[in-house]
Length: 368
Image 1 (cartoon, rainbow, N blue to C red):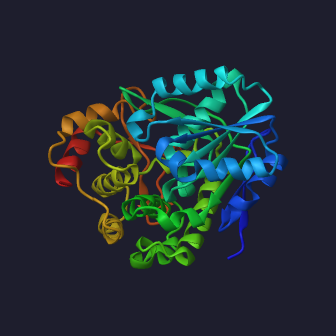
Image 2 (spheres, helix red, strand yellow):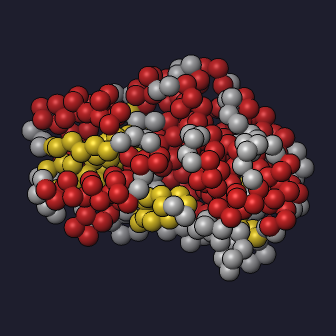
Image 3 (cartoon, helix red, strand yellow):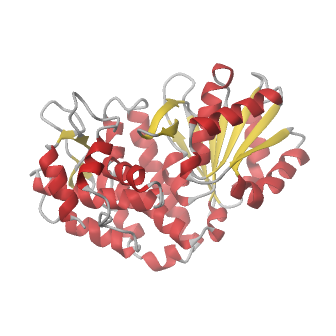
């Protein structure tokens, strides 16, 4: 298929394009020169991605006459910390990267979040480019300009909005992505079915070829997912309104991740979160009957978990939820669907709904 460009509209200096396709990495040097010119590029990747792609990427840039240095950090969500940010920032300073430099964040969601936050804060902000290497990052975290770190209190509680100059989504990289990571990425596609486009379900209905990394199936899935997120981000760049619908599944999902010590992949935790929050939506009278059953069937089709781990206490999860960024006046609020493809609004027009703690605990205990 021919590569396509999906525009992401934003405010002043915040519009950019997501280039989706196969062999688009061949155009990376040209795109950097056109969209993000710099004297020196700081390529930030975790050590696993650096081993897989670092040498080839630096060689590609060098052949094009671009100067770049590789900066690595240990792989894993548990390394998305202030310590990692400090080490990377100090390394960039030691390399004397100036305001005429730029960051190239290469990898999954962790590399994008950490690399983006380094770019957002280094010398009060330098440009950056996202090169997602996982399905989850292509569908979600590389689009929208959210950067951030995890802290002991919860996920992504320290961060900044910093839009990339361009996102280069090389679908060919998914050919070697482990099957569990493909499944975890599809949790984000399932989320788009629930929050924005019920018809998208037909595109992802057949799990076998997707899990087998059939690129002819994966490429249109990535394209449509990026289009859906781009439309939401364009309408609400700073998460003041509509963009909150993207948090469906994440209030419970982030609490599960934090409480379990990041033993699950992010997409697996989001799948659990969507199942629980769909149950809450029905129990609270927000959603039409059958939503939970329909969503869980899609989740399980991809072999993703739809139940809260038995060893996680409901009280611990509720406590973790109180660190969620949507909490207002001490009350936990959820982004909840009314039906597949349509989200609920509260009486005041907000895209989140306050749910009583007793119902949250009942939902957690009923979905084990």
